[in-house]
Amino acid sequence: MLAARRAGVALRRGRLPAAHGAGAGAGAGSVQPRGPPRPVGPTPRAVDLRSDTVTRPCAGMRRAMARAAVGDDDYGEDPAVNELQCLAAGILGMEEALFVPTATMANLIAVMCHCQRRGAQMLLGRDSHLHLYEHGGAAQVAGVHSQALPDLPDGTFDLDQLELTIREAHGSRYHPRPELICLENTHSSAGGRALPLTYLQQVRGLADRYGLRVHMDGARLMNAAVAQDVEPARIAQHCDSVSLCFSKGLGAPAGAVLAGRKEFVAEAWRVRKLGRGDAAGRRIVGPLSTPGGIQGLNSPVCSVDLVAVETNIVMVSIRGGWPSPTELCEHLRAVSEEELAETGQAVSVLLFPWSAHAVRAVWHRDISAHDTELAKNKLAFVARKCQEKLALGLRPTPPSAGGA
Ligand SMILES: Cc1ncc(COP(=O)(O)O)c(C=O)c1O
Image (tube, rainbow, N blue to C red):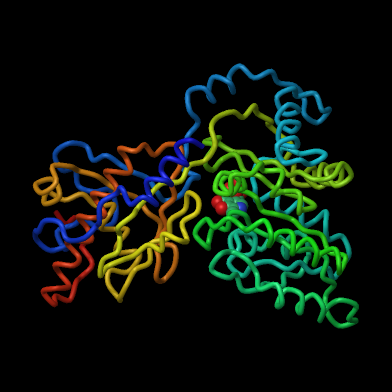
């Protein structure tokens, strides 16, 4: 968490130099594209910013896992799981919590518990993880209809639109029955935005008015708590249930919890049984997730809206048609002799091509300040090369496999 703050502050203060305007050199075509970069001089240092899911258990966590007292969780006899559930419930200010292997399962169980009638509908963000990346489990497994609403840039819904959508269906004999509102906090596709507390309160009010429940996909809720400087329970208080993931910034190999009222968690236990998600409870320890920085990426090639950077996720917007997000990621990943000659470093930076116009960088506990510096230098190098190509009016060709 401290690392999170330090990196976030560094980012806002603009301590990291601009990615443009420094040095000169040959075209970006010399950058090696896909696949493992051809070894150049020293072994390239990899800075993996694709996601905070790439974090690995630290030594302390491995030790704790090896030493954890274990028991049969089916009988409620695994002390480590019991302790973890208790701890998580306390932190989230919920009555109880249930350990599950993944946040995807936590979200699905929540949907199944909250929406038990046939023809139930949940309202959720069009770009939310639950809607896009969880294999449509709500439809496939739970048989719940998804009413997907546009997510605003800060990860919220337009509340008037939310209410209108609920009102249209509320009491109608033709619409599926709206029963659940799902929020994502922080909102990953919005670039790690933390949902404002007043907004959460308003959503709660709306849900109460129409008799709906509120579930929060809080895979990164701790990041929101850090960004807003509040206890996690202050965020969770507006929800009927919350999922929290351990395999992101925490560095755990797997694991999540689903928290809520006692009766809800009892029901969740039954649903978990259905997916046999009760196996293998583990003691999970370790620090919380971390943000970081790419300040000064504003160049003719790409830009970062620093106002939108609230937690550990940074969306880098690509200007113009080249390089595409995938090409930019390839350039950042590749290591060339030119880079080594110009910068004296061989660094492979891994980012994720998020959309047609953006790449995503996610900071986490395994990224040191030095890694950030290396990534920043590499971004500066690649941006410079791309600009040089563009300035020469060259039609850039994506680097071919095996290039230098
Ligand atoms: C916002 C959000 N929710 C849920 C999940 C799913 O987590 P898990 O991999 O534990 O299923 C992710 C994974 O990246 C996520 O980003």
